[in-house]
Length: 123
Image (cartoon, rainbow, N blue to C red):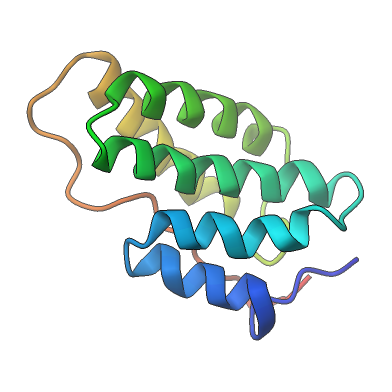
């Protein structure tokens, strides 16, 4: 199943993610995730885990956020780049930067959440 980021729940979730509405992003994406098969299912689960991590972080749960980012990164690192219409290499790099800051207990966290950038291909 191709992942269409231009309309529907994936696009709505991406807009929510970019607006720091992480719980809503998770909800939109989960409605699609339930219908997917591998490898797209694990890929979208990684994006859901990324959104959930920042929802936890906003609630003050740094340990939970780091745990979710670790799981997300493990899933994303086995995906080719790009995958599912998303540039996975820069996303993995951003997640690694956040993980390092969280694991070191840094007071100064990266300025921006990991970027979920679309490629020119929708699938």
